[in-house]
Image 1 (spheres, rainbow, N blue to C red):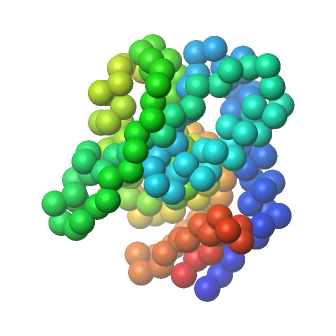
Image 2: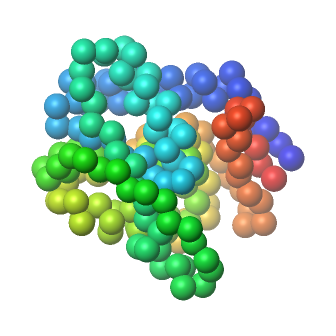
Length: 169
């Protein structure tokens, strides 16, 4: 087991990512945030909260997206569906997709398929905490990355939000 991000590093990384979003999207009038269920919402909750703390008078649009039935492996294993909560229009908006770990790219492909059911965004950007760079199966790259790592197929990246830390197993 190798620690990729300690608690302190994780907090700093989330702060940095939040400030990058502020630099690129403030005042957020045409930007919405979408956390991917189940693990991406922990990251998204923190980022949206930091931005909301900096701009308390600004109404941020934040939703949670379940992609269970958009996955291409749903027939291979049992998936428990989570709730999708997107109570706003994404038509012609800049959508910031937020997830914890980018691995093969299949989760993000499924998320983009699911987003189309809610409208046609002007732009979709991807924010991830950890990018496992050399294991991609689809041509998907993050716009915002907390930490990029090199790992082999047998390794697993685990984000423990209770400690909190990120480890490579």
